[in-house]
Image (cartoon, rainbow, N blue to C red):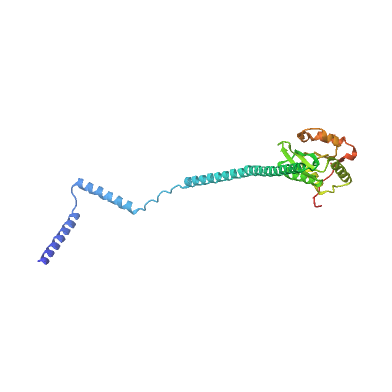
Length: 304
């Protein structure tokens, strides 16, 4: 039964194909239908031709504006980074040294205050010991020899400490001890000293002998050379150790020992620092044995 059904289906399909083939070969007599068929065939031909042509290449994308914007953004970032680096360097160059200088000044001030406190304690202790000895029947204590001292002038901040150390070293070389140091002044920096130890007449004799050495040649004492070298390195400066005065002006360096009577004149220490030319003029009026002109002297290394 199944075989019969299959045979009938094949016969039906074959008959349909024969009919269609016959119908395609039959000419179309209706002019309207013929025109429509021709139009359809032309459209099919056009579509086939269009399909046979290669597809047009996609239009290239213009990436140049994008690359230009990326380059501009990168250049702007580099410029900002360079500006930030420059600002950091300027801050480091300007603020850091200033802060370090101020910290160094504060440390120096603290050290000097500690030294002053130690000196005052020493003086109080000495007076208390003298008072105890007097209470026990001992004779009155001998008076302590005291003289004034001064160092200052138009001295840069970085040279003040070396000049102060040279001054105190020179005073110690002549048997003097710092009892009190009073710093003062900013534009005309100076420090006033109260020195104890050798008496004024003994100092006058020693300093006059030092002037003889200076007139004969270079200073022999290392401490004196250090003080002269320190003053030689500034534009204007004055140093006083009891009866000794050393004045530094442009192209001028004078050492003088005025008579002790002049030490009794009460004048403000800042006056000598404010007007070192007046001090130099007073020294030039001294006798030759009390003055030494070292304007042509040039410092040498202390070890030479």
